[in-house]
Amino acid sequence: MGSEMCIRDSVKMDINGTTRVCGLIGNPVAHSISPVIHNRLAGLRGDNLVYATFKVEAGNVAAAVKGAYALDILGLNVTVPHKQAVIDELVDIDELAAAIGAVNTLVRTEGGFKGYNTDILGLDRELSDVGISLEDKCVVIIGAGGAARAIAFLCAGKKASEIYIMNRTLEKAQNIADAVNEYAKKDIAKAAGISECGNFDKKDYIVIQTTSVGLHPHDDETAVTVDEFYENAAAGVDIIYNPYETMFMKLMKKHGKPAYNGLKMLLYQGVAAYELWNDCKISSDMADIIYEDMKKELGISE
Image (tube, rainbow, N blue to C red; front, side, top):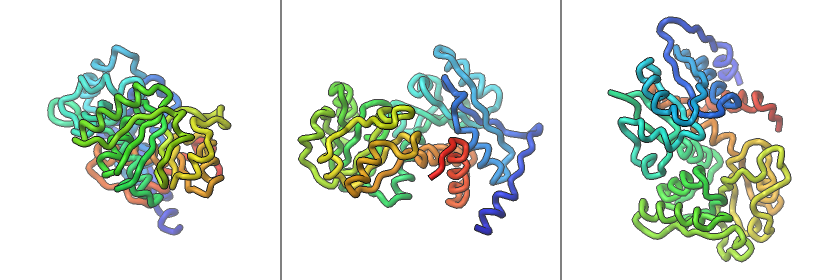
């Protein structure tokens, strides 16, 4: 507690002629909590850096990236709907981000920006925090959107034994499974319909819920309602963080299984981006402080 207070008391931010700029491009961006993460980190570390949001309309991504480089911006986060479109504007891209087909972090380099996907780094660190290993585990991913695709690649990289992508539209799930299998060079990913949850014959699997079902104000909804599915799981993560405890999490806990929300994933994807921009390592103490600030900003009380 003493060291935490010391860190908090030392926070000070002055913007001057040498202040570096980072930011977020997307549409919309006004709701973003990213400025809380990055400006707080800069203050805690004493870095001369400020983070702002930039609303970029569809069709203006190329101009935004080119302009950011011309303005000597240090780095950018990218949110919807530009995570795919921004790839064409990069001078380099991380191998895993290229395979996923989505970029959420741009790091300034010679001649332009290099793209990374720190969303998966965020989930990876959250899983590590709560003691969940994916190695040799069966993983069930609910949903087949951009987040599900990135998480499926993470599971493959972390040597999951099997990956099931369950979605209402089977074709979307199959597209992800095919891409993951090509990347992994073996058939570890399979597509399945949500309706198959009731007949799922696996045990002790990790469930990662990636859909928007259950997002506030629809707190009482969940994509999977079958009790047996939760009973046979080992643990679950819902990437939603509002509400703080989703119906998915409640059903997991009802059956005695640990369940976690996506707030730490959001925290750690931001931490990973900050580390890339500044070639630094954020301590666990600092990350914990930011996490509490995020909860305060979102009006979350446990």
